[in-house]
Image (cartoon, rainbow, N blue to C red; front, side):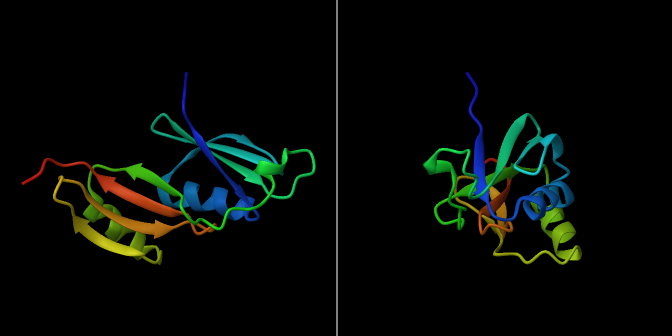
Length: 123
């Protein structure tokens, strides 16, 4: 078995380009109706919205509410600086959590929160 996720989007090309530009995702499949991205063995699908050929649950575009994507990194501080230098708005600034993670959050073109996380030991 394998678990992966996807987002129904009205911004297919913009979403694909966001994940490629910011995180270097590899494109496994790219069409005018579906894009499959890979990063570090994890996959994210992007499905064009309002396709009559799709079942009803897969038609309406996501507004990002209640969803998040995690990108694991070695150095969250360096990643935040890199993304800021690119002009990417930071939704939640870099912070250290009691359980050890250091992370910050940006939003993708669909409003999905992208949590950029460095896993660390609690101090």
